[in-house]
Length: 364
Image 1 (spheres, one colour):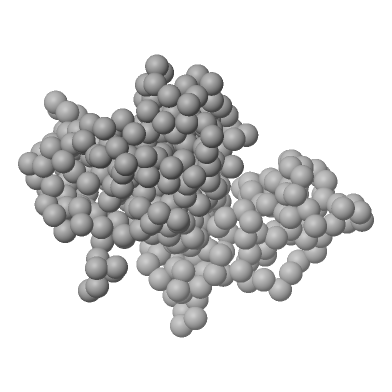
Image 2 (image 1 turned 45 degrees about the vertical axis):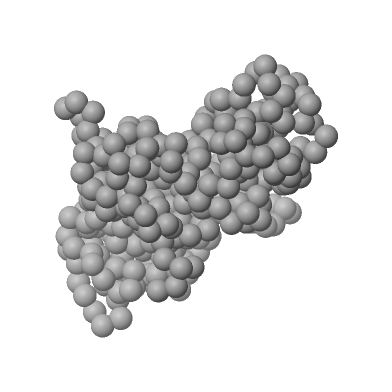
């Protein structure tokens, strides 16, 4: 394995408790060099504690952690090749932008000429040229965030840890800042490990997502993998919206599986997507995989119903369809036809359909 292929951060069986509360339960994770990885989960899932263990702010109860092949056991936080960007940015209000950025360089006794070179480089990188003399209270929220990022990057860390970096920003700024952060990371190549509870943020920024629940990593993969092929009901429901069909009887055929749900529907699923399904599991179908039409289609999964609710959201409409047996199905429709010639409406009799490959097997 080449150095480019070797994980920059390797975690093995890492556990941590605070008193009687178990926070992390034997986590193992490999983070690829030069990637953006999001630790995604609800409050209390252990993601911030994992970030703090990587930073050296706490010691694990068990397990190992290595960065760039070096074991971090007994290595204090200030000697680790990482830097951490906090939610609050933690800027010194009485110092200028430039002095905030070079604070760590001064503490490490970096020569003045090198400090000035690095300051110029990083101000250009984060697009704050000409603002070095301002104080933090003279900047916008997005600019303050870029100062905090510059202060971290100027020290050239091997891994940059970001704890809810968008939390202090207005929602309108977040999409722009996400693009900026991603663009900066691509330029410098530093590995970013990002803590967030925002699914959209993780999906937009990450090369990989580690979904955390109750102190464990329940799935790790690319955004596409964890969204399109969730392994559990928790992952499927946490990342977006999904229709869950509880499995009763399962029949297997050479090219597909047939699932009879607990409420009497018969669903055909492809064997590739459904090879591990068993009674007691669930079949999940994303709303955008479900089509709505006035009449039946040739799809293997085709069910009659009535539109109960329809929400127009500009480019999309979200529909709730009540099937003949009483179950509600959520579907998302692209509003590609603005003429309204065949517009859907509450009370309309319709058919919902989805292909076998849209049905994904989900464990408890």
